[in-house]
Length: 397
Image 1 (cartoon, rainbow, N blue to C red):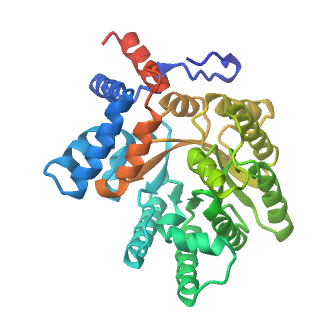
Image 2 (image 1 turned 135 degrees about the vertical axis):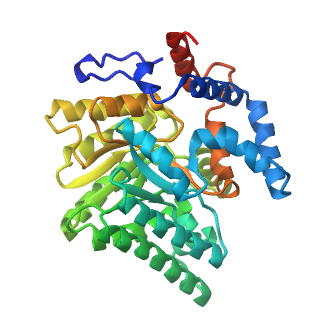
């Protein structure tokens, strides 16, 4: 449990009554059972493998079983229309929505074009709904990993590669242009370091083009990388020099093992901090930087770390900034860290849930990652499960 004095903020991340007020008893029991199952590493590993196998072979009832269990916890629906009930439910508790179409890792041009059309529909959907200020996108849903990596190496590209990359740039530009037209924001997710330089350059171009009068486009900064704090600061300086506003979404990072393994295999220094303490320090320094410059940039603290969220909340209050200032935001994933999200919303801060949607076969890898994140390798109860059980005890159910 979190032991922090948050009285002066009227904010307590241990308050499970507020955290789970949106869940009736039946849903609270079902969620608790799901997190108990996800605390069993072997069960998660077995279930993930079986799910992928069953979906590939089109076994009967596979999609139905997934939808009624883990999909319900971590996703908003299979289509945009299905997400509306989730969006409305969150809005009733003063929580905004970041729409996130769950496609990723695609490589065929028809799939990439189809993803673009889905993102454009999501932007239009968000534009008609005041509680959906942001649509998130992954460039890996708009481009093949191979093309992004080859462009990042800055080697001579083949004619086919060049044409493919130009199509990627056009897809991202179509999204950002549509978002700017109808006053919706775009979060561009971060990827592995060997693709990220390409993505950074693309997002910088979009920010320079569309962030002139307001922040439309946000780049994502993975603060477990040793170079990202400096990159955040240089990105801000570059934006000021070129007359646009920086949009920055802060995350810790999602590819630590993959990054370290690749660096070891290829003989270059790991781009990742050696320990959690160093990552936490860099992350919190980035939070301070964003709050320090909130009047000339916009940021989103997209963390599940209670201390980092508390830090930003305290800085906002201590400096007399409005709690709901549009340039200072918080965000957590749907189905996780409700104790952070709903308590921030109750205390008056701008906070949203990342609501992933899409067909089961498109989002299955996302769901597996969420299950793995909530697995306890030591056999101890996870943070999520401990909070759920505390609320069950409080309700006497």
